[in-house]
Amino acid sequence: MTTRPIELVIFDCDGVLVDTERLAVRLQVALGAELGWPLTAEEAVERFIGRAKESILDQITERLGAETAALWWRLLKQRHREAVDTGIDAVDGLPEALAALTLPSCVASSGSHEKMRHTLGRTGLYDYFAGRIYSASEVSRGKPAPDLFLHAARRMGVDPAACAVVEDSGPGVAAARAAGMRAFAYAGGPTPAARLVGPGTTVFHDMRELPGLLAGR
Image 1 (cartoon, rainbow, N blue to C red):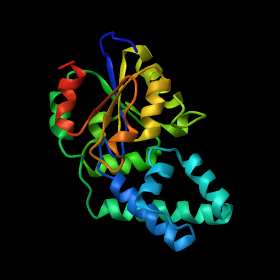
Image 2: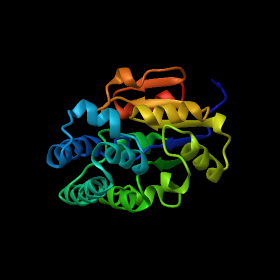
Image 3: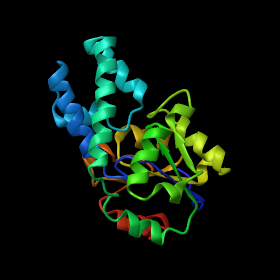
Image 4: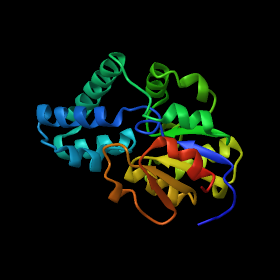
């Protein structure tokens, strides 16, 4: 793994910037019970968290059929939006981390631009990242493939070897490694820290630690 100075920080969105991953897990478990696929919270994390829409739909289609998968996704979007509208916060410590961050940054998420406009907007973060937000809908393969992070680096004009990715899911960390980028894995969400550990990855539990970690402290 490269040791060259970091020139760009690429943030995932859900679970890293906005505190939505626990919400997503609850919704997925409830939908599974409702539509015929009983899931534990741990199974929902393993199967769905950090993955693009296509990967999630493929799994549901294989288990329950295309019609139920389409209904599942429709209900998930509706209920997620309703829950976010009742109140959502930035990840604990994130405002302090951004205030101390001196490096250029952007967002690269498995979520759609529509979803990010909503969640980042509700937490007051959209304007901070406007013009530097990238979605898996812009590439052919979602996480754990490296395509999205490589796309973000290209658009930002930075060599992948000089990029750091802040993630909170196993697929996201795997995508960062596959892109040849350093991974900083936030273990303050539903994904167990043990699933985030690996070569070139720094696991941390408090977002306030991030600026110091990026600076090598």
